[in-house]
Length: 175
Ligand SMILES: [Zn+2]
Image (cartoon, rainbow, N blue to C red; front, top):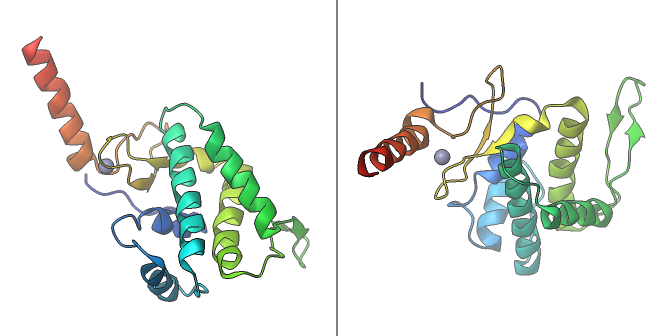
């Protein structure tokens, strides 16, 4: 078993966004990534900082989903962005579900709103605890835990998982 299948539904976008650590290092990179994902671009360097702050706040919550401690500062960042983007619940026209449209219209709002609404939906339908950051300190890659008992710890069982098992084995040998 190697890399895990991607996250379901709108969480796939959140997962892809979290996996941009090596791909995005400035506003131009971010705009390219947005274009590739059919998202609005036009980010300034300042918006880039805001977007990265939210990305890492999400990573922190995903690490908490992976048997970590809750990060209150990260939660505050999410709540502040939900307010800045002007997300509010609205019942869809067919009356079957709640959507989270945003009133914010800046480039940052238009990128962060669909990510935040996907997180809200996942927290509401119970799939959010499966969204995790890899337990390896030097990795923290985002993955969706498809295991039955939500026991997945590493992004890749034969990569980070095997390395962790090897380190634990070495520790046992030397003590
Ligand atoms: Zn990993």
